[in-house]
Length: 187
Figure: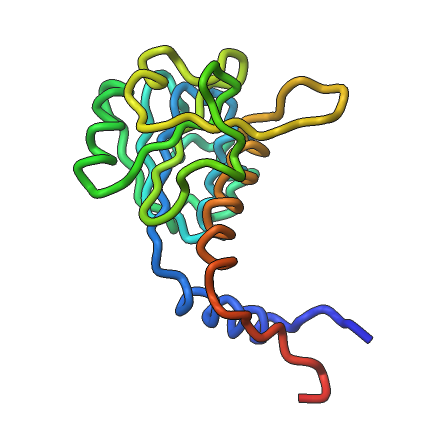
């Protein structure tokens, strides 16, 4: 029978995955203005070990008081920097050794599960209403979209970011030998 892990067991499990993870993941956040969206993005980034985040456009900052309601302290676990322009952010990511992949429903985009997410990857996401700007789409190495088969045509930016970060990490993890699962209560 499965039971929830105790906090110390969760820490042990997370430490095992951290040791198995070599690729770096970063994020460009362009013009995400809703505090709850940025807080959720920060929490996802902290959970998946995103190395750093560049903010551009009119993106709200992690220090905004309302961001903390969903970030729950995770904003302190991530390096972030505001840059003047989106092209500056893409250039900074590339200079730091990342391949930059925008997540957007755009012409020429490939399905996320086929996107080049191996190695060090910087994902880029855009504003709640308009997505990635033309400047951002023009500055990235590739564009990927999340296939959707339901009756809604798009995802919330925080949800899309979580899916893209999970797929990026999962790509590396699926290429590894199988890992042991959480210990059972009998262990």
